[in-house]
Image (cartoon, rainbow, N blue to C red; front, side, top):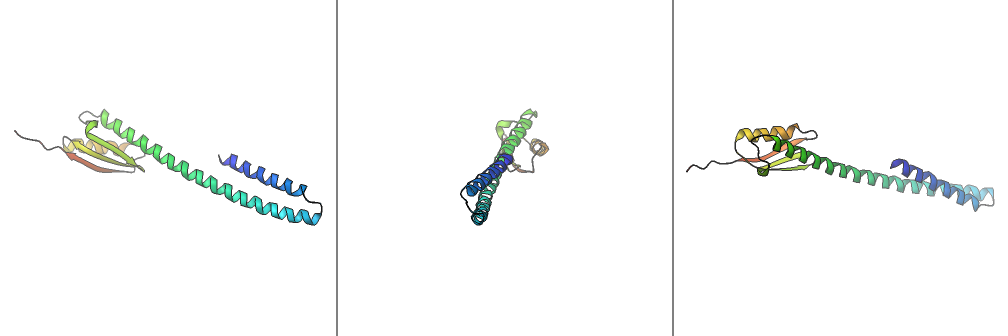
Length: 139
């Protein structure tokens, strides 16, 4: 993407330069036109640089969203694969690499297992545990 935008800068500057020179009859006028072309080319270059930065920021943000989705999917799959853990009782949300586990589990061991599984997934920065242990009702 940057290569294309850099080529766009060069082409724009060259077109401005040719247009300026074609309108000049005298050496003095050519110098003035050259300076103006240089100034305009610099303005165009600055605008293109600003757009490149804007596109880079947007793609970084999209990358974070994709990574968060990937992380949540991997954590959910790991929990689903573990006997004794029921994924329908555990919710997994991910934001900027931070996994939030919520819902209910049968006991402390399952709670610890779910947290450990989430922490083991590549890209997880932290795990926020909001899992509750089901209370046992005695009849």
